[in-house]
Image (cartoon, rainbow, N blue to C red; front, side, top):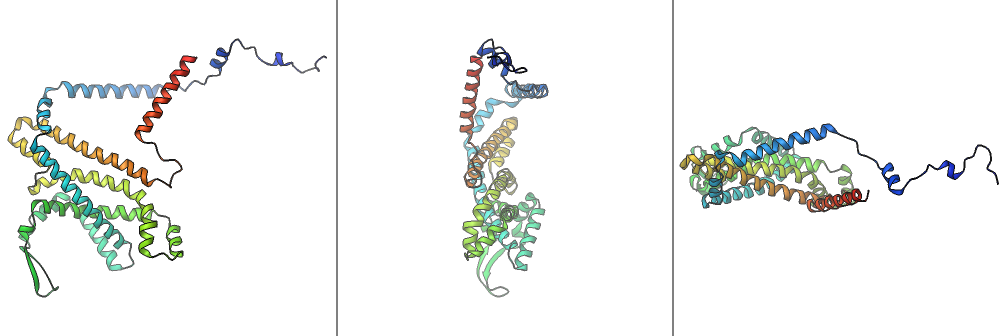
Length: 326
C-alpha cells in the first residue's frame, strides 16, 4: 500500500542512530562555563594557602609556647571565670529583657516610659564606662538598706562587702544585656501575626496562657537567632571585666603577658583560640535550637551538617558513576 503524497515514513522521519552511547552523549546537557567563578576561587585558595603557610612557618607565632600555655591551670581558671560570668549575665540579662519588653508592650504609660528610658540609657552608655562606674559605686553609697521608703531602714548592708569583683562584672553585663535583650524579645513578640492574638482572645484563653502557649513559641523563631548573636557578643564582652580586677580568660592572658613579655603573641593566640571555641559551640547550639523551633513553620526541616555531608557524598558517587558509564 503506497503512502499518501507529502507524508514521510517512520524510517525517513527518524534520524539514524549509530549507537545508544552516542545518542546519550549527544543529548547530554553541558553546564554553563563560568570562568569568573573559577578565577575568584583560585585567587581565594592562593590567599588561604599563603595565610596558612605564614601561620605554620613564621617563628614569631611561637607555636611551641602556644602549646605550653593553652592548657595551663592559670588559663583554664580564667576560662572558668569567663564561662561563669557569661552564664549568669546571659540568664539575668534575658530575664530582665523579658520584663522590659513586656513593660514596653503594656498598657501602662508609666511602665512604657520607664522601659523605654532604661533601654535608651543603657544602650547609650559604653560597657566599659558602666563597669568602671559600678566598680567605684561605693564612693557614692557606702551602705545599702532595706526598709520603708523615705522612712526608717530595717536592714543595712555594707556595699563594699557585697560588691565583689564577680558581682560587679555580672551586674554590669546583665544591666547592659537586658537593654539589648528587651528589644530582641519585643521584636520577636511583634513578629507574631495579629490574627494569632485575636484567635486566642476569641477562644477566651487567659492572657498568661495566650503568651506562654501561643505567642511565645512563635516568637522564639525570631528571638533565638537574634539573642544568640547577643550571646556571642556577651562572650567577647566578658574580656572587659579585666578592668574591674576580675581575672577572666583575657585577664589571665594579660597578667601572664605582663610577667612573660616574650610570650605576648602566643598568649594572645591562646585567648583567640579559646574564644573561637566558645563562640563556635554557641553557633552549633543555635543551629539546632533554630531547627527545633522551625518545626511546623516549614514543610521540610533544613538538613543537619551530617545529612548534608551524606547527601554530598552520595551525589559525588552518583556523578562519578555516570561519568564512568559514558
